Length: 421
Image (cartoon, rainbow, N blue to C red; front, side):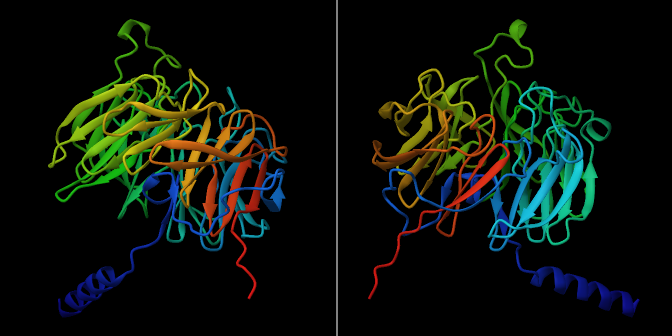
């Protein structure tokens, strides 16, 4: 008994003194789409910023890279094996391949290729395939630690265009949305894959959505879309706390691909939830109660209708690309009214150092100044390398802009040069 007590004390001491692992995830810190960078270029040369390197071995795919302090993780297809072999690539910051790991079959039914961005927590990488399977992979060696199967483990349902979720982490949990009738949203032990809780939600198929963790003083909430509902789920227990129905599509008209294409991670700021669901309620602001158990709709805006390009919030303004109207929009976050627009197509959007980076569907990367909802186009260039659609979200890390276009990944320097002394 004495030895057991000593052992337990050692375990408790070790657990309490472990450093919280750094998380690198979809759309940067807190999935907010704003990268904490400074001293970046405010204008580019006519041909764009200087390219550092590029690679063209990723196979088909749309998933954005995740960049840590010394590695780049990105999903793709290993075409040397087959047209459907899902692969996680690991490169160093010079674009040199360190290892690659096969992890099952990728989605090839429509828009073939990888969808998900990995989530890196310490030395573990969590990555999902378009078939909905979830894998935990050692970031140093590429060894698969554990995996869960979408169909056999959770009785999942495929959305029309394949699973596109980026796994969410909180402490020892990793969250995933199989869309099963019983296992609609699940929390797994991130070290073992063991099921911690399961939320039935509404039994709907997934909606391409990467969930958001909302941290309140008294609880944590997972906010995630299924096909026709935004759901708020208690992160500790899996209890469904509230939902927001996407009521634009009547029940009799609902089927895969109709009214269920909700790809944007929600935003949370100071008691308010913001989302853009172009195939649903479009731009919406919700007020969240202090205890996290209730929501109240504040406004809707049908023009702020981005499908999958991401939205972001800075100050009292929201920014995002339109779908029905091919503009970049700004909207007043308090009133929901559109404040400005640029006719530069529909696309994906991130921000850094008080500038917007807007990658449109025609392959133009635009640099836009934003100030209190006012938009000014400063520079743009055409992305020539790569294959298929321009769907990926740009990533910025340490003065480098990373952009995936299908088979290719490019790295550009966007750091301002320090003046010589």
